[in-house]
Image (cartoon, rainbow, N blue to C red; front, side, top):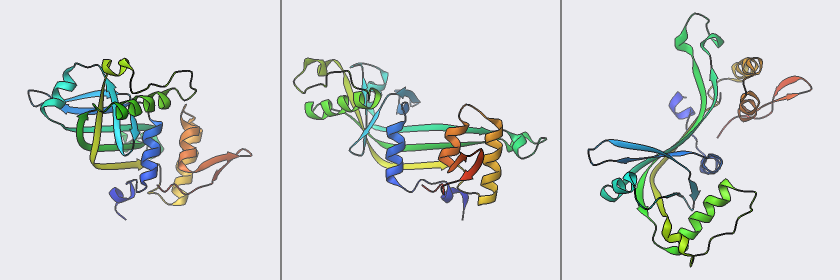
Length: 210
């Protein structure tokens, strides 16, 4: 198996789950001089599209008006693997466990008030799941005070590296090193990798296949 294929997220449901969990994505548009402009944005993935809200004026809006082809990505660094995990003398062996999704798509500004309301309420529901806000309605004037950008994917690809390309023995060795290093993200990373600490012992509980 080639490594590239082993790193591909094959489950669309896993891609949606990842996008719903991430708080920051980055949209790339092309400015008037032909340079890419990359902006971090809050976003929600609804009905197979990315929605973001914005001020009604700004460079990224001008860029999209001139060229609606955009890129969008979200990523999560799970764990930095120092080079000494493999060889204390070779810094080139440092690595990272990660999850990422990259989209190429067409951006548009939502004028339909029902869709705009759906997107804005979706954003609130994602970032404030505990509630304590009044949902928007399509006849509210506040909808006119913001722009909603929609990115409809023409291609969508996910990649992840959580040890799925390694055999069981090597994954266990890596997991033990991560546990010993005890970074702030170690326990979360181990769970995603399919490991749990049970009765003080590290055990593999799941095969990390997405």
